[in-house]
Length: 108
Image (tube, rainbow, N blue to C red; front, side, top):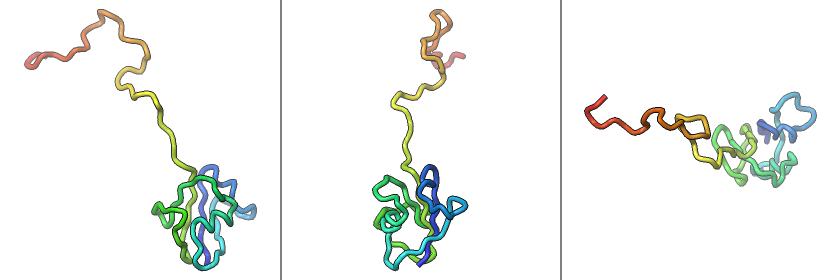
């Protein structure tokens, strides 16, 4: 069977040298899984996110003729520091520069 493989991010380093871009077709035996494909491509135990025909799947998902398999690097990011809203500076506002407390109801 033949499946189309698409690489994103730094996973392009695993593409066969004869592919002009980040997409190509691979021949696999019937009953092959995403893990079988990953091994054949040299991805092996590398952590990855896999999309099978535009839906996220796991390494054990069985492949079928004509499937499109997309390999993406694991998604991570963010910050361990809390999000600051409204004040981009790390220093406190100057004293005497106005009140930061809300107005009592009915005023303003």
